[in-house]
Image (cartoon, rainbow, N blue to C red; front, side):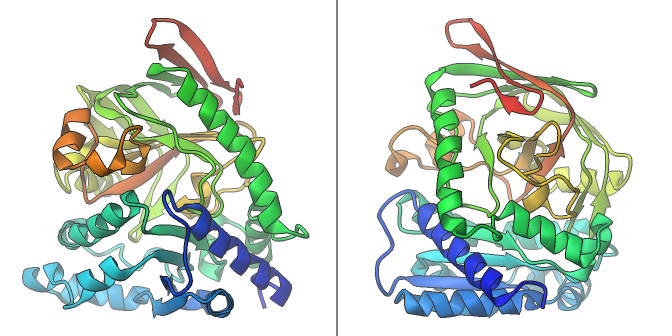
Amino acid sequence: MIFSKTQLAKYADVMIWAMENARRGGKFKKYDSVLVRYDKAALPLAHAIYERLLDKKYLPTVKTTLPEEIQRSFYTLADDKQLKHITAGEAAFQESLNGLIALHAPEDLTALKTVNPARIGTAAVARKSLREILDKTEQAGKFSWTLCNYPTEELAKKAGLTLKQYAGQIAKACFLNEKDPVKKWKEVMAQITEIGQWLNGLKIDTLHVQSAHMDFEVLLGEKRKFISGGGNNIPSFEIFTSPDWRGTKGVYFADLSSYRTGNYVKGVRLEFKNGRAVKATAEAGEDYLRKMLAMDKGAAQIGEFSLTDRRFSKIDKFMADILFDENFGGKYGNCHVAVGSSYADTYAGDMSKLDKKLKEKLGYNESALHWDLINTENKTVHATLKNGKKVLIYEKGQFKF
């Protein structure tokens, strides 16, 4: 067994707490509907979570994610109509959900390598409406979600670790070796939240990031806030926002590799002008990168900017999984941007008024893509405040709080 029964029970408690804590509105109630969606290798954790949800009087539904070989068949054999098909009742099911716990445990990271990325993009664009349902209920405070990782031989191999080492990184990062992991998470989240509140109080206009390979600037935009100390994703040490994509300029560089829909991408360099990536290169996976950025109008624009403080994150190895890699601590922490869709909950105003028209006016990006690209270099981040003052907010992997 990869994790002991005690660790599985602790992991289950952490994931349910994370889902509950991520709710931006009202609290969960008895008999709320919760979906547990898991890759088949994560069955032990799915089982532990399911039992705990029943104990807490939720209404759990358990669904297995399509195995990689079936996904490959779908993207290879389906015609255009089949790629765009949405199963009857799926939208209604999405609308009924109050919570989602997703368990990621891939057994073949390159299964979709031979699939034309444009076909994956077609299916993703067609299913965007389903994601928008959850976005809407999340904005209304009626839904929240969380995501975690379960160790597999494939993940360990691609990360250059043994399965035991990989599982050890997860246990360390998620505090599963602590006597009370949930208590530890609450303590860490409180510290991260304090930093987020400090950032929100600075009244930032732009952020300027500089490193050995990067000179990059983002415009925070009107009515924006930094999100911190939530529960979306376990582990989650990042402090992030969704900037006004129109103010993005300069060069962004991702030194950390990533696996996405079967493709390995390394050394991504994006040059932005007037908010859009006008030049994209990569040491590996460049063709795939360019196809993803051409998925739709918003794919070549950013939807997220994030920073992680190395003092909180215990992740110090490449994990071949964006969930962990975007929370990398190591020596210098990390920053990452996501090309593609933005997060509506970074809006600092009345969420009920944030409709599509207002999102467009404020520069919130819309796309079927959301791809985090991670930089772990030593960097400085300066904020130019609305009064013109420049402040160093991040250096050597730490916030200057």
